[in-house]
Amino acid sequence: MKVMIIGCGRVGAVLANRLDEAGHQVVVLDRNQQAFRRLSEKFSGRRIVGNGLVEEYVRPTLQEEADILFAMTDKDNVNLMIVQRVKRNFKLERVVAVVHDSILAGLYKELGVETVCPTDLVIKDLLQTIQER
Amino acid sequence: MGEVMYIIIVGAGKVGYHLGSLLMAGGHEVMLIEEDRSKVELLSLEFHDAIMQGNGSTVEVLKEAGANRADVVVATTGNDEDNLVICQVVKLMFLRPRTIARVNNPRNEELFAGLGVDASVSATKIINAVIQEQVKAGDMMIPLLTLKEGDVEIVEVELSRSSHIVKKKIKDLSMPPASIFIAVIRGEEIIIPHGETEFQPEDKVLALVKRTSEQALRKML
Image 1: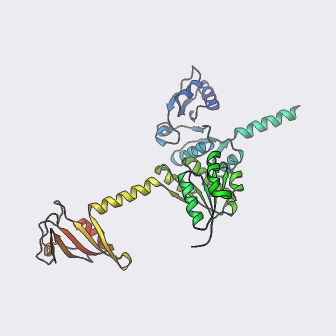
Image 2: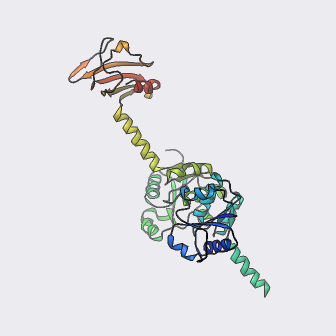
Image 3: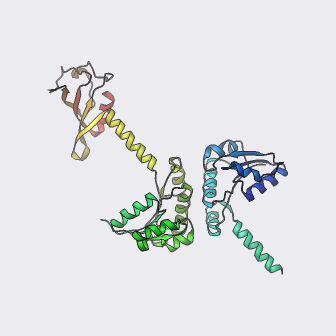
């Protein structure tokens, strides 16, 4: 699969490494060149320095039939704007926004935007830990 | 003044601040939402209870601000992604208010409209439109007087060397409908034109024209 990851933070970088190891074609975009230091030395995908909100930076990748896009910068609103624009302008199988605000993540799901909420996941995990005792 | 409205403004930067002041002076009820605590502190002297601290793109803060009874929510932050989400959250959660977004990057205007924002305002676009208007007027026609609520105008045009009508007589021109030349100012002289009048470069031509023919007259000159 061809995967584009916007935001090479702690989570984005690990996701990129894993997908790359698994043999997928990965493109990582971040505004800050330094962020790519989080990628492993073996990472064989592409790195692009740029702003995910500016279409010029994402268009070349998405035009070549990418399958999935993950918008996972540290800003919920940036991620939500990126995925909504991409859904309008490109044909991708899946477009996913990481949204930390749990209410916001739920709201946009209703709008048909695929969201993943790390806060919800952590809570779920913690609750499970308690129940397992 | 029309009816009193309740207007929530998110972002107390220059745009939000002045908009809030204007609306309050106009007798409306206003609530400013600003995330930066020091800004809120500074402005609370002026806005008292009409300013609150918080992230205006979250449901909690909008609820606290009373978005469910607001007539209008205006998102004026300097970040388009925040303005978009603010307006979308309001539309999804509170139904009642009209949403207006400031668009910092004019290229986002279309996207905002497509994603449910009721109206967007781009300063760049407005200023550009004003400049274009000025250029056109300075270049060509200066409206001197408008009659019948703008239906009919008296305009002044200074003819350039490249004007199509220079060295031509009025009787040989095909005038657009509903337009007539009323005076030609040549240096100190004012000429009441007739069929034999021939135009020269740098003539100032006064014409009476209906708004509907203005474009055609502009083209001819």
